[in-house]
Image 1 (cartoon, helix red, strand yellow):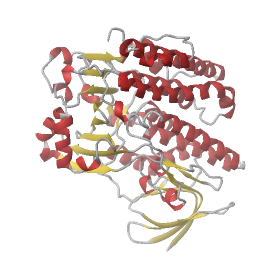
Image 2 (cartoon, one colour; image 1 turned 180 degrees about the vertical axis):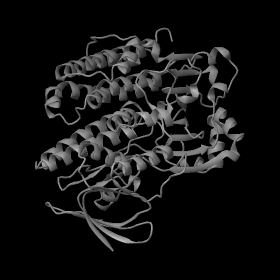
Image 3 (cartoon, one colour; image 1 turned 60 degrees about the vertical axis):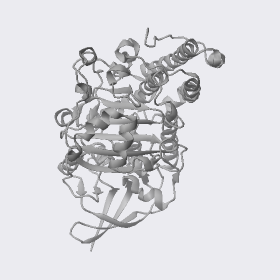
Image 4 (cartoon, helix red, strand yellow; image 1 turned 45 degrees about the horizontal axis):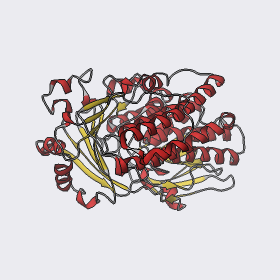
Length: 531
């Protein structure tokens, strides 16, 4: 029986827990950190974990905050952005609307092989002096109150029992949600969808699915396979994500009411479902059934959480707290945000500062970002197959993401109360406008004719949009950041008016009343001229 005392014990050594340990070690080199992970390392390549695709915040966090850029570039796949095909019940992808970029945008993002990454994180944690223990089963824990320590009871890989006392207890246990479940913090967030996914031990090269040279030459280089490819239809989307190990990840994500989980909750049923809704994928999978590595499904995957950070020195991160949706790949983004807030609270505690006020502030900000992002998904799945509406929604969603949240993260201002106070009106206005626009997209979908022409809607054709991506890494002082955020909110206001104008022009007067409810346009960016 081993009884030891530590500064922090992290429950879970997956992506969230190991990243948190590395971030804590980077900011507090003398901190005594123990990570307890149930799975034994090394993990297999193409480990059966969702979260292979990263977007800009997650990629920036891994590459810059944690110093993993060299590993990402050498061992994983540089993503060719998101790509969407509106191909429900069709196999001729070259003849439907495609949304994506013809050339890679400058700010990097990656397709991650989670086995390779988490093995590297575990090795790096040990190299940096973190006590990373794999093959450990947590048997129970007690939360301290009013300044007392927390205790964790566990059994190591050899069967020996240990009791660990810690000042901080940090839950990164994934969907096990040890603290969340113990304190009954799980909340229904109103977004109900299911997912199934599997991996094939062979690369799927979507670029070769037809011999249309015009279609193949739209992208430079002709490597659509590096994108997170979405093949979409009413109430669902499917993903194709390549892994550095040579395997390919495939998934179906669907509104629970429109596509029951029972229709796809085995490999055979999923293949039948794909044969109906995405026959091109079904055709490719059918020739590789002997390459199947694994299969899993997840019912009602999205949930909220009543608490994230406590003045009693416990906190949640990753799926141990709240989870949104795999669309737009926000999982690593929110790991970055919650881990950053945890590190700030630990720093305040080490400086002898009282935590209650700061824990409440950080929690309020976290949930503000969570709710703003949840609005992109909740009730939105019916329009997933609409080739007129979804591309414009994607542009809006990304403008909101790059224009507001990315600015706060890239400029390291997530915990700056002065900034949030100074820009409270603008940020609240942007948040409210986003909610209204999500409702508008549904109304537009209801009146849209859903035209689906053969075309590439190339995001590189929107210079202002590509410029937002290109400038994410700009170093801004306080005045410049405030000016940029105000400018981006003005851009969103103008973009909202342009979207409504386009919808009215395309789909009639039923939407015209929306014009009177939106602010006067100050900027008028062009939306896919002539498309």
